[in-house]
Image (cartoon, rainbow, N blue to C red):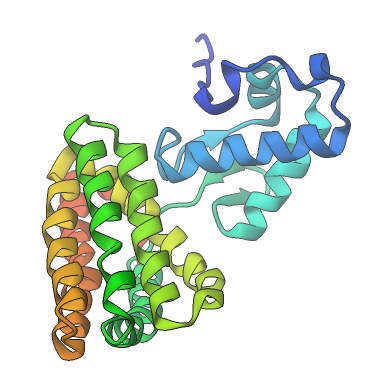
Length: 241
């Protein structure tokens, strides 16, 4: 049976790293970023088997930087190496998703409260980020939609006076990225997120800290309904917690 060819759009369309004279470190970083993107946007689905040979052939690089990228992704929890079986994209875990939501609640609900107390001119800038997300969604540019989503949530931390909380928050948000990428085309998750963002942004602009926190809590917990729907459609994507 012929082996299915892997597609890595983030790097496959670019010149081979070796052709640009890049060293192994840069090649390894590019391989890592390309694989990480393919996993987080579910081009590589949960549970999918990967091989160093297939990936190195697709990227046009040696197996060494791919091996390094695999090790990093195992450390990130995005790949799982099983002795005698191979390397697989980590399946989704309801328990880990619940943990990610807990972390987001603690940080982002408080950030929404504080953001509502920032100067009005700064609060009003959130409407520009929301408009960018709406435009990307209307154009079916879902990668742009998710980038705008991140920018909006980051700006709320800035308004709250805690921009450095973004790094620990990103760990939790990364755990949710695959749910978002599945939910957008299959469940209309982009439209739901935009409606919820409207509520968060309006409460912050109105200076209503309690409403801002409540709207943010509603928004953060909404992926739980996506998890149930995705599990019904794709039970093979999940581990048994």
